[in-house]
Image 1 (cartoon, protein in one colour):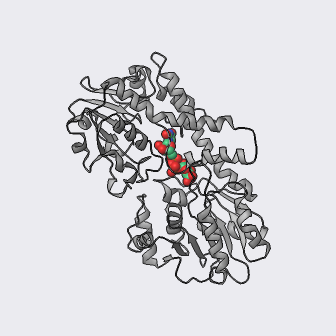
Image 2: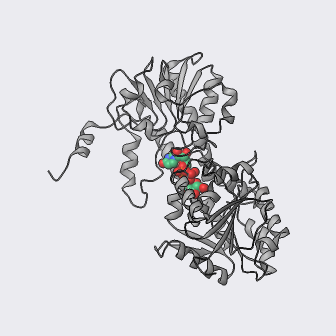
Image 3: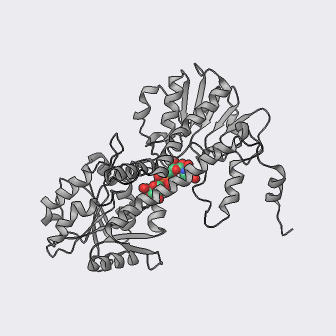
Length: 463
Ligand code: UGA
């Protein structure tokens, strides 16, 4: 396998497969395969269904280079050097991971091996889908043992909104691998892809690599739930403020400042699913009940309701009250609403009889199916969404909201009550005519920031 001449096939043109694919295609020849005709057509038309910074540009470049080939599984294929499996592993209702898509891919490769695998047995099948420890070997080892292919587990660490950046500049590459020859080839591939940028490549057993993915996500989720639990305690302490406390502890490099933002908790297709899967896995292997992991979920599940409670404390009865929801996506710069706190918040408001206006900057690309029964009123313009409302809830910290002042944001509101689930205005002065409430300081009321500290922070010490 000569670098530069590498042929890659990716199963799954979803978020991971597509973002990884367009990046690889800047240097190599990539075939992207899926079972979904609409998805493949949208990629062919340079109009992918997911909203991701840089994706359209990279896709366009790859299409111009003719180095990306979106295809349906029903088409014909030629053997490649590497196959990446990037299909979804969604949870079932009990939190167990459903491997049916991964299994289907493995079955397809096996049944049509002359189309996908080199006769020499040199093709490496690389599992990128997140799977519980033991799965990759369970599904693929027999193929490796028969010398039909070589196998690896190579977790992805892309965060939505920065997926292209994360693919091009990862903090590390983890390679779970059984065989030395495959390890050398994969290492050479990544060194070439990253242009010798000294990205750490850590090799380990396949099971350790599978476990690393769950451990990494659980640890990040733990940091968020920790910050949220402290935020709840802070609310009981006069003059205390969660941002000040987190800033104070984050200067210790052993702690770091990342993933300590408190608010309405984490959503998305990864943290909730992965932490729950690890808990289920511990049951399957009859390990001791993981106390911390269960705590992460417990703390998180309660977060959205704290915001609704704050709102109820102010408005008392929500029946027929007009409430604006700012942001549906589980985080900014994505159109993904999987496990988004917006869903449980809107459901709770709807049950209380509220009239719900909704705005999100990428509303056109959001799947609104989960909100169908809640009679939400969709607005493309944030001012129109806020016009005449009794309160607004900030759910996603989009730049579009942050860049405004509180006066600008609330100018059309009938009653200027802002309940902020992301603490995006806690560093600003709140005008007296606006009621601004948030999570993580006593009485949930701003201004909590010590004015002396703020003055010192703003001072230029070189003066
Ligand atoms: C996460 C990980 O960050 C990635 O490293 C990983 O590859 C990915 O899962 C995955 O397994 O595929 P993602 O879910 O896209 O990425 O987004 P994050 O930026 O991690 O945010 C997750 C949630 O945590 C969001 O709802 C966000 O609002 C929340 N969050 C994040 C906080 O509440 N506080 C914080 O300080 C940080």
